[in-house]
Structures are given as C-alpha cells and as structure tokens.
Image 1 (cartoon, chains in turn yellow, blue):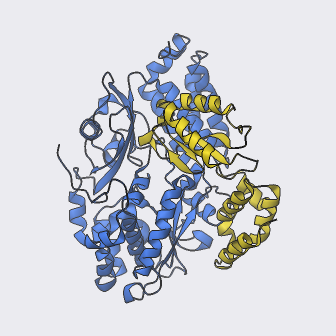
Image 2 (image 1 turned 45 degrees about the horizontal axis):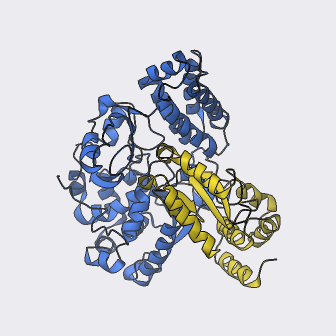
Image 3 (image 1 turned 30 degrees about the horizontal axis):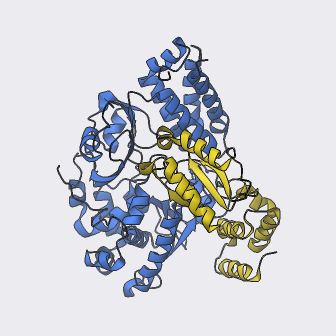
Length: 157
Length: 424
C-alpha cells in the first residue's frame, strides 16, 4: 500500500495537469523509489492514479531503461557499454564489478545492495569509462576508484 | 593557441553553473527585454532566418523556417519543447551547456516561444542527466521569480510557463515525433509526418521542438544581429559557433566552443591536445554514432554542415569520436550496431529485424567466421534501413555503410585471415 503522504503528493501533481498521463514516468519513478522496483501492485496503483489501464502503464514500464519491473538492489549500477567507454575499458570495468560483487551482469549481490546492468551511452564520453549509480555519474573509473565507490555505498547502506 | 570568441560557454566556471545574477550582469535577458519591448514576432523569426541558424540536435533543420511554419491562425495552447534528451553516443555538449549556464537556453526558449505565442514550454530531459534536471527546475523557478517566466512576462502581454519533463530513458525519445508521444505518456514510437509537429504536435496542438544548443544561440542573435552571428563561423556556408564534443583517442577529451567550419585537424591537434604518443589518426565519426566513418583523406575538412554533406557524411551533433590505427572498425561498427539494435523502439521492421541480423553478421566477421557473400548482404541491409519510419534507422546504417565504402579492405582482411587482424 502506498503511504498517504506519497499518494497525496502524486494526486496533487496529477490534479495540476490537464492530461494526467503526461506524468506517467514521474509517477512510475516515484512508486519505484518507494517500493524499490515497479511491482505489479505499483503498476496497478500508477494506473488508477493516472486514469490509465494497467496495460497502458505496463507497456511503458517495460519500454524504459530506468524503470525496473523486477526487484533490484538498493543501488543500481548502470555501466556504459557504448563506443567510447567500450574503447576505454568497459570490459575490464564490468569484469571487475562482477568479480567484486560476485554477480553476473543483470544480477543482484547477495546482500541485496547492488544490481549490475549495462546501459547505452550516458553522455560522459569525456570521462570514459563511466557508470551511473542510482542516476549519479562516476567517471574515469579505475579499480581503486571502483573499490572506494563500492565501499562508500556499503558504509551508507 | 588562437582563442576564438566564447559565446555559449562565456564565463564558464570550472565547478558550478553561472548564477542568474551573474548572467544578468553579462547581458543576460537583455535580448528578451528588447524582444518584448521593440520586436514583433516576425522580426525575431526574420533575424533567426537571416542568421542561418540550423538545428544543433543533429538534423540541421533551419530554426527560423520551423518557427514560421506555425500558422497565424493555428489553435492554442501552443507548445514549445526543448529537446535535452541528448542520447546520441559521443554527444555531451547539452549536458555541459546546462551545467555552464542554464539561463541562456531558458532565455532562448522564451524568445522562441514569443514568436509562436507558445504558452506551454517543456524541457524534455534524459534520466541520466538527473543533476541537469534538478538545475533546470531550480533555475526555471528563479527565472519565474525574476519575472522572465509566468504570466505577463516583464509586464508584457506574453505568458509562458516551463516545466521539466523527465524521460524514462530510451534513445528513440530523442526523435521528434517519438518525443511527442513520450511527453503525452504514450509509447514513444515515431509517427510519420504529415501532419508535422508544428501543425499537430503535443495533444494535437502546434509544437515547436528544438535542441538545447539551438535555443542558447537565439538571445545572442537577437542582441548582436544575424550578420555578427554568421561572422562567427570560419566558412561562408556556416553560421555561429559550434559546441564540439571530442572523445576517443585524444589527449584532452571534452567540449570546445569553436567557429562553425573550423578544420578537423585544428580541433584535434590544438584543442583536444592531439592524439596520445604512438597513435595515428585512422578515422573519426564526425557527428555522433549515426554519422559515417570519416577517413584520413578528410583529416583537414571544414567542420560545418555543408562540407560534410559534400563528402557524403553529416556534422550531426558535432560529436567527434577519434580512432587510431589500433582500432578495429569492424568491431567498432559491431558495438555501434548493438547499441542501435538494443535501442530500436521495435515499431518497424527494417530496424527491429534488420539490426540484429547486421549484428550477427558483424560478430561472425569479427570472430573469423566471415564469408565473402556477407559483404553484399550487409550492403543490402544498409539500404533496407533507409525504408524505416524515422530518421534514426538511416542513422543506424551510417557507420555500417561507411565501413563498407571506406574500410572495405579491413572487412576483407577479416574474411581472408579468418580472424580479426587487430587481435593477437
């Protein structure tokens, strides 16, 4: 169940627009932040808030890269695998993360903290190789830097 | 090193945005004040046309002409959209511009909005740029508090509100008609015009959509005139400055504001710090992932829309990705095609079915399982991509087609040697 406060905030935003479904991505992101991922219940809730059918929400949820329809870790790591990062060491960054987190690409670490996903160019080619963690960027990656970043998130968790 | 005028990145700070106050102290919002006080809508459009401002998002569509196509009797409310989706691989200039001076593009949006009497402004931004989205939300609010946005801007009859619309993240959302669907909360498939967005866009209403950098040019054109703007370019065919993003095998990757039409070798050698020791220029993609490989014969080409068109290529977004003699371009094309295949919206066949097939053939070539007859198949597939619905599919064909034209020998070596010649 959606907490009243979040529900009211969303309802207020929705009441403010002529076309509620314009806010579907915002609503999905907010529900995802609350539940940790966009659960079946969240799809239903988004649909009823926006006056859409669950199917209409579903076809968007499965379309967008940053909407997760399956459980993910507290921190979602998106490693850029497009051209410049690929030239500048995507493969070794990915392998290093897999080794450190003891997971495959697409997997979640056993402590539930990290999910590792590849992603297309994130617009930080001047800082390649780069990755996003919960939509914040980390560039010019080296093994040492990755260790520090993971450590920071572990200590905050 | 010759220093060229910095217009869009003027007073760039190393670690923070330029504040509204700082921008105002530096002629910020002067163009808007002049516009509302003394220029008609058609005056402004004429200035933008005379300045030969071409869209900086990749398509190079004339901005003045686009504004003119909104009919005088078109219905209201009208929409103005700033495309900050910037998902073209290799491109990061809009990110830098937003983090340098968000108010320049906001001012440009207001002036452009005034010319078409737009009441609703939307900044459509990719989720990877969450920091940019937060900056824009805050600075839009500040612009509103200062009277530059909202009801009766600076006491005039003109009103405009701007909202920031976050995308859920997909390459196709950068395509104009797909972006319209995305903004309406529909599945972002492209739609084939006509009707064009300036006639029927968001919710069937007139919509003008342009890129961040394009909007940022507008206040300068209004304040300093079309002739001044054209004079910034180093070629007769070009106009203005261009934010070039340079990455790959160079010493100083980054965004450099340089005259439109500056030569490629000057950008690489003087501004990007040259190539690393031992690296030699082999090719580059001159304008993002959906442009073709530019071979060494054009190393000194003038980087404007016309010059690249003449050699069968495109300036695109001005994102230059540099490759040296050790880069396997078959492998690079495979990486690019994997990107396009994954990001295809799946709406039409050439892209949905064709790109995975191209990937498969390229992968086999790269792994040493290539055969002679794969080359004509790849050529055919490149042609088929041109029959897709939207302009992104021909873009996806560009690296492949240019590989087969300019680096055919390299492809044949993969077949002849039964392995990638670049791998030990």
